[in-house]
Image (cartoon, rainbow, N blue to C red; front, side, top):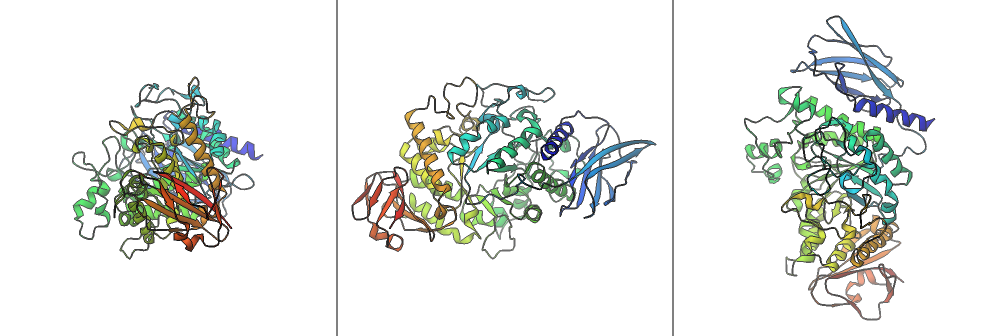
Length: 620
């Protein structure tokens, strides 16, 4: 019965999302649920073929009240305020629209919430997880039949171009969940999966055009639901990539705006300054703050006005709808620092009120630990207090691991930058909620950053999988994919080897991998699966020692386990004196090298090679 119910939902979603525009009004959201805390739902009604200025609206359904009909500036829109009582039962709410004596009835399903075995969702993503970030279009093509969809603007399909679509989809990810789980991954974060009906550059997904349509070239809503179910059946989690700040220029609310201030309007195109300092600077000019928050990214990504209450409701309800419809577990928020921050607090709270275990992390590409902490839950005594649980930790990335492996050691240089950055964790309410990473879809790949130095790549991965917080791996980093964002970001978004039929190299099976690629893949798998069983790394404490001539030592520990991490960033071999770290090594007689499984007694000299790292589980 449950399987039949899920199939019916999938069929409803598919038919509702990809039907052509008709005279019948479209409703956003196109359904809701009984027993939701968010029980005052505002439905945005849209038709681009007729005026709704004189339309009368009526519904009769036990437990559902039409509280108000809001007539917006654009007569193609209405906003219906509904209140759903706790007594309401699942069923079809029939909403009647009468214009000039002619009546249309639109069904608005009121569904039961997910219950029972196999419906676990909104679990949150924590320090016990290992996130794998991928771009669906560039990971694997599991269903060539959806490579092109008639009626969509972008009909490109060319793997030789970094700007065109390559055909990857959700079925391609599903096909390779064995690989990801074997690698040690527990949570999958695909870049946005919403429909991107733009004329070009639709492969990345960040300029989507319809919040309530899953990209049909990825397989549509049925494939996304199947993907979520497949993850949960394995005990894995789904992270949705959310964009509140902007939409694509072909979004229906841009082509036909509900009201003049739906978007941030300027006399001419005005770009954001990208200066995050304007958000927290006590001396900031109002002009600079407005440019930061209200300026547009690029002309093709119009900026949403979240101070407009209809926009705010539209965005918040879509977030709740996504979690309930597709069983989302974690929420990654794109371009967090450019959003209206009080709105973000309201949106975050709505999600956490409805789903108490739900976690989220925001993209905070800023410069400085204080700047970053401003946008998250923190211990600072400041006028604005964010409720965002965690952030993408650009500080441990840009000013941490990247500097540690690439810069010569100095009083404030090299690995001292990593040490100093982590020493500032006192500003966060819970730094374990921050997401660490080596690279992502907007950055030069880590292997290129380290000039294709294998030892530095190993060091980066070992650090990623042992440091405090939540580790995130960008697809292909485990097989030495390389590329620079200069001259174009597409070079860091190339196809995962083996994701397409006929690929000569296949990272899923190991066919065609070089010795070095296979070695890094094996190292990633070894450490990720060790981490999966390590209480000290997943939930334990951290202690770090002041670096000494490029030698940096830190520990992850709890009452059951102690893990010692030794990073040598020097260009020379270094000796490790265990007595120098007796606050944590006392009582232990040896350490087992996690990579090689070799037992290393503490009474014998230990040498660590230049620009390398060693991780040991201590034994008594």
